Length: 116
Length: 112
Image (cartoon, rainbow over all chains, first blue to last red; front, side, top):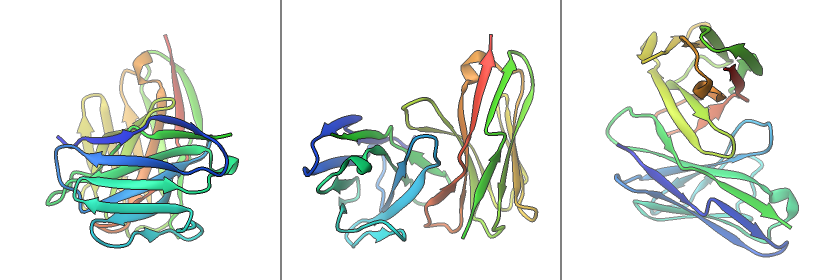
């Protein structure tokens, strides 16, 4: 199978602090992972593409200095929300695909971030 | 820019009915299309993946079709059950290494 683990599932933080979210591919190596954000009653929006060993590619309108992405290994990508504000409160979810095959993307279980 | 639209936005039907969820996309140049299920506060579960060269895929009571030229896909659920209650998302991928563009989903409630 293709399993993607995301941690933490829920986090509450104070305004101005930073929060790190981890996304791991458990049974395969993922050279590329994706990060999405979902606001209530909205669709998932692609934030950035995370590439192992290189800089992430951010979608238009996503602040790269606010949403730091690191993909230091073939099984781990992290998203750090820096200087969090209440408007950053959202559901963040990552995905990855097994290489060498058209398996589609597997998603993590998501992280509910609440900034107070 | 690709846009994905799902109709209806919400649907409530009694158990046992067959139903169809619709998805349309504006740019027919897609790599594949994927249907997902999302339970409240949870991640996504992949239901069916249709490559651009395929017309349909089936898994159990689910059947998804793809008409790439017209920018449409349908998800057919046979003999619906209360456990099918969830939000169903349609997503398209432009290229092999690209992320997905999602619709807003269809919120489905199956009444026991």
